[in-house]
Image (cartoon, rainbow, N blue to C red):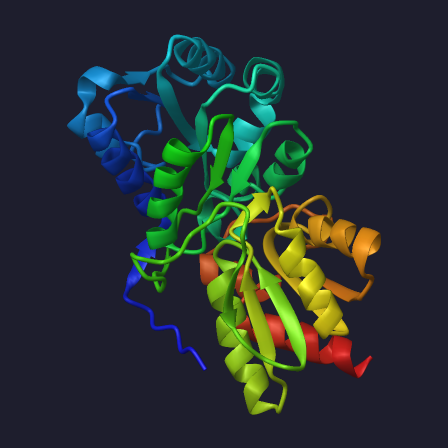
Amino acid sequence: MTKWINKGSKPTRTGFGEGVKAAASKNDMIVGLGADITTSVGMHFFADTFPERFFSLGIAEQNAIGVAAGLALSGKIPVFSTYGVFAAHRAADQIRISLCYNNLHVIIGGAHAGISVGPDGATHQALEDIASLRALPNMTILSPCDATQAFISVQKAVEELKGPVYIRFGREAVADFTAEDQDFKIGKAHRMRKGDDLCIIATGHLVWEALQAAEKLADKGIEATVINMHTLKPIDKDSIIEAAKKFSRIITAEEHQITGGLGSAVAEVLAENHPARLLRIGMKDRFGESGKAEELLAKYQMDAEGLVQQIVRWINS
């Protein structure tokens, strides 16, 4: 059985920023847009290397999306990054009409995703961004599990897609455990661990927590398959249906509201194709709060131990 090794802690925002820089080194049509939080969202890697191709537009997210649309219509590939709460909500109308309606190739980096943002608190913790953007036609949503996968996600978004892309990533350093030469395919989930008793489908930072939870469950005699759903739209229906045919119990784990996010996407596929018992783990219709990332993950039972407790309680019920 595959044992995933943490190569060292690294923020996914760093992987994203380094990915933008690497992509821009190969493609001079890439331009960067910022909103006064350049370093905080990892865009300083690009801005420092290509200052003539970076434009800081101030705290004006709606305007930034409009500018990005204009640049895309002019043949450029704009990359705009801000906190996910601002991108998905403050600029929602501009993303819907200017980007999605026109199917423009603009890459949006949604930083500070999930509860693990920590001390910045509820106003900055993106917990509804997937729900808001998943309903938009032409939108692709990527949720890499670590910094290496965030780096690769940018390359794939630039080279393989044509329409708008939202890449979701976090603030704090997390385990960096996937391979640089991994077979990353947009729209195709990756099975990280094989087990015969149940299936955990996780996304983003919770993939690592799910893998650690699976090891703890194994100590209890429960063997779990773990799937990394790094693409939330288009969702990998085949992998979900395959899991439903094999397992009577499926669990989703996400740093997001359980309404509208990964859990809802999986539930939709199951309801239409092959029903199975489903436990959705995530935020349960409430806002977050300030605190250390590890404390918040533990409080809301999104760390490995919390996942184990919820899964065992569900099985015993």
